[in-house]
Amino acid sequence: MAMSVRVAATEDRPAILSLLRSSHEDAVAEQDRGEQGFVEGDWDESALAELSGGPGIFLAEDDDTVVAAVLTVDGGDPERFTGPARRALAMTKSLEGPVLLYGPVVVDPGFRGRGIIRTLLSGMALMLGDRYPTAALFVDNTNERALQVHRGLGMRKHGRFTLDDRSYTVFTFAPSDFHPRPAKKPKKK
Image (cartoon, rainbow, N blue to C red; front, side, top):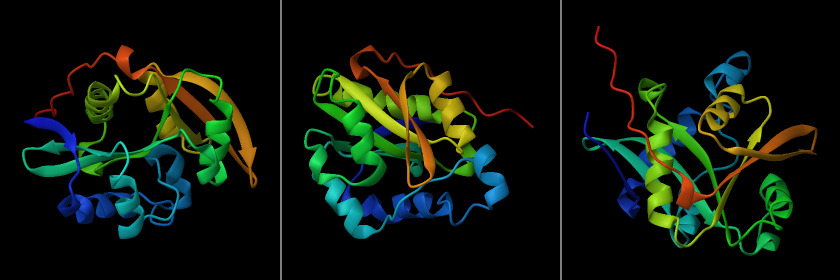
């Protein structure tokens, strides 16, 4: 496995959208969402184009295949956001800024459980740690897999909030202090 992390280019958008759509809450059976994880929000070409002007979308590749993505946005102007993103940024306004809002984080199902998120976030942190002293993510509390992953990565639980009958947990970390560990090698059959 030759895993690498890089910033996405325009030609990567179809692969990113495919990952997002395959893990979207509408594509994952309700009874499987907690264990499998899921992505919220409306993701299309224009949403990705808007993000490409900011800190970037980061990809993990196995050889030349995109296997994971994390979307990022500069949280310096919370008023431009709506919904959970705005609430998460309001909760983190007292932290050293600017705050990097990241997420969703999505991994191809065939690559889950191998430490790919650690590798992906480590690459993101290495590339952005000097610009963003704090990174923040909000997770729907029914997304048990995402909660477990972020706790396992040593993220700090910053707080919780409820919006439109959904409860969320906000996690934060300092990108400059995020120390990578290698991804797990696939188990031999």
